[in-house]
Image (spheres, rainbow, N blue to C red):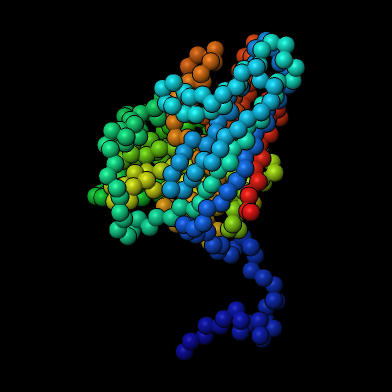
Amino acid sequence: MNFSITRRQLLQAGLISALPIPAFAQERKFEPVAGPWRTFELTTTVTVAEPKGVNKLWLPVPDLDTDWQKTLSNDWSGNATRASLANDPARGVRMVYAEFDAGVTAPTLTVTSKLQTRNRSVDVTRPGTVADVDAASLKQYLGPTELQPIDGVVRKTALEATKGTKTEIEKVRALYEWVIANGHREPTTRGCGTGDIKTMLETGNLGGKCADLNALFVGLCRAVGIPARDVYGLRLAPSAFPYKELGANSANLKGAQHCRAEVYLKSHGWVAMDPADVLKVMRQETAEWIKDPKHPIAAPVHANLFGRWEGNWVGWNTAHDIRLPGSSAKGTLPFLMYPNGENASGAFDSLSPDTFKYVISAKEITA
């Protein structure tokens, strides 16, 4: 005899109240599908609060033209003595570089970019079609960077995580799941983190933010011979899905920087990935720290950030170990995702927009 009783039957019998199921217990939808282009105008304004001597600024601009993003224009204004589009000499990453001679009052630079984005969606379980790709162009995405070696503890971890896998898709899936199972979002990390994956693995502290967690995924992929890259960028707008942590307030994009990841599959080309955002949802979407990616809140993003992105985000570039042209600083930046600046007092704190005095906003153009 079947004694099962549905919630509807209990409600009809008056045995339970007609209260809604709590939001934290409901499964949500997150399934970006390829669709129409969205057009945004993105504006960054920097004002040097305490000018001293010659002041220099470097602001990233959209530097990717793909089947999911197009740059329409980059313009700038202000009271700079000199300003132009410039490139990192080794990586070729574009940025606006501005100099303000000593004596310029309240050095100010505004950069406005118009761009288009759209969702990405690839089902790796189905056959794909890939155009021929020059192997040399993929080589740079197989090698190490200063903070992402591919030997030692990184390769050892990657081999252990992919043990028993046969295809490249199986390897990528294993590494995606490994990062989600072993890493965690650490809200106290400054900015987006640094991506020092060797230290993360050696210490066993696999907490961080997107530049740490996605860098870990990228480094592990490269260590087993799969081309992968970080894509450094910025959230532009709220998510179209019911996830507050997967969007941003367009009017005030302070702290909206976010890097994603891509892997190159011979069967599908470059494919979107974002294990860091899975871990962000698990840690911060609700008051409860979700520990299981199969939890109803986490399950949709866990399933769909393997092959999909939402187009409420702009990618700046994919480069590591950046040298800012004209900078007096020694060494390199691990990546260019934030405004940078310096003067006679030294480098400005890029992770502190309130003291560095920069604001970023975006508006969607629908006409």
